[in-house]
Length: 232
Image: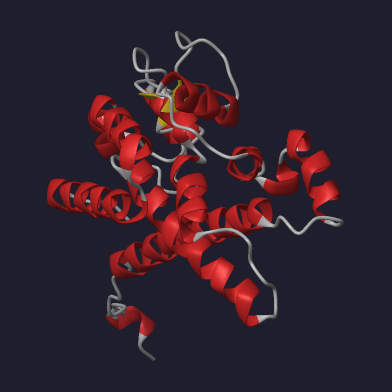
């Protein structure tokens, strides 16, 4: 899957609409300020560096964020349909989902991903983007929380932890939080993780199925030719 400029602009408009619906006051102003400063990165950054991961294309990051927001809100509703009395507002779910991968946009001066110009690595390793070595190292979630603090975007402890837990038990740093959720009424971390994981798997499947369809389209069936000598 690839998206064109019109789709990128539509995704941006949709994100602005979500912000307008769920936030207000100073928090909304600060969220809009961050998005204004990072607008180019939002519209152009990929969600990953390899197509066999997910949304490895220009604009893939924002596309993924929108999927994550919708799926996380849906996961919250599934919790409620299964008898869980959610104590987390939709706005908290949207806030955590919206910023769970914010660190993939870089720090405002340096991008997180750079286009891979090494043709060998693109063809042999399927590496379309590479991590920017000029960017000061932080984990994606640590950089996300640093940027939120920089822009004075207040988050409650549950949103803060949910951002840290977005990768679930795939991230060893999140394990201690998931162990504690067993004895906690706060399930926002698992909601965001399941929303992110669902989005990632679906995006990867869309890419894989698209690759398969393209491969099938390239198959040309030709009628075999038989020489007179072969006919007996």
